Length: 211
Ligand code: SF4
Ligand code: SF4
Image (cartoon, rainbow, N blue to C red; front, side, top):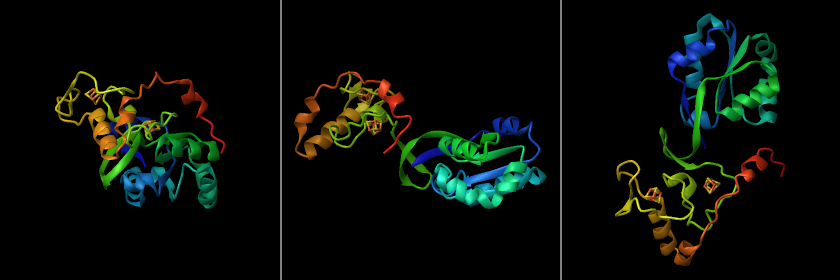
């Protein structure tokens, strides 16, 4: 799930200042679960904007162009009549609404990370979408994200009793977690694999996916 948080009030107000007529779009999936852009938060935003809000819609998946196109169809006149569209979703949703409508789009939220949900409101950063997934070698624990230094070979010398020096030994060392998990799975030899530096050009190559 894509984890988002509401932009600070002051920043949002500053961003909205030039626009008189706004259409608000929410997200029925991730931002609903994050409680940042679901029905409730969209209603609150509309209330806050008062007369400046000329309409709103919660799109099931605003990051899916087909769904955004379909679900926003009935609001077309309002969307086109707005000075800007305020989108309460991750950056992918904001861009998709912009691509569909060609309107000025404003992000109401900051997109934080791809997260694991422990419970509603409690998420863990677990994937940086690096383009070269190695979870098969690391016991399903991502070192790119969960090691504070993003090390592909660990642990580093900052590990003490399974805890990481970054964050004052409050967090588990990802590489100790990886070792424990691999051992538990009966494949500790994978721990000894050397991983060369990443090919960061893959990041660029994954920008446009066609399956
Ligand atoms: S290695 Fe980590 S950051 Fe890269 S794709 Fe896999 S889970 Fe995501
Ligand atoms: S102690 Fe572990 S988690 Fe922390 S930076 Fe070193 S290898 Fe990464």
